[in-house]
Image (cartoon, rainbow, N blue to C red; front, side, top):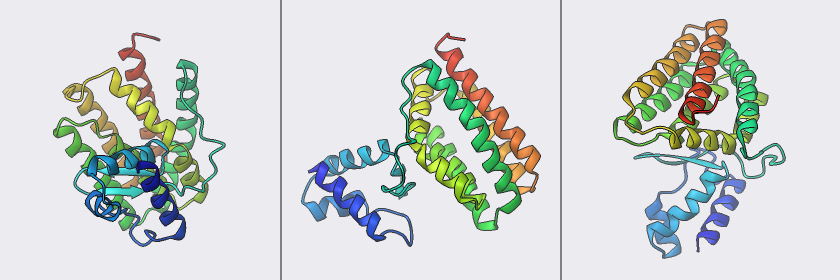
Length: 225
């Protein structure tokens, strides 16, 4: 049944059934549709998240982050520390460009989407959760604010590796690590502030500072440098 639900959601996305809001039906709706339990639905949604197709926000449901037919050849798994280094080199370049583009091209609706994602991440942390999906949606919102389809498609196509690296960071820290969480929030807010003020250079520097710090936290946590 999880496979059947997964296939149904993918087909519905491809048909454009959820294009207007980008939001999937609720767990309860899918459970009723297939006459299954909610844990069965959650298993299907978990697979969709792992494949980088959707992201979930507590209390807000699941949202599409990448079309299932988007090219998957560029989606590479994080297998070792060398891959982590390569990931951060990639992220430094692409996300810095996306942040600069967002600072130049963002609209008031884009700012609201970015701030909503940041607020959702903050709430997840306050509740003792990891905020992985909220973090992914925050970075996707920045890419979309650039209004540059190449930045958007690059970030959407690497949602899987992004989740892997965030989960790696989760494995070397605790959800209630207040010092770390304050540090990350300050870094995120610096990115938002630069985009709001339409300062591309500052947005680039804020993304770079966040990326360098994120890499440092992982390698410090694993005691590997």
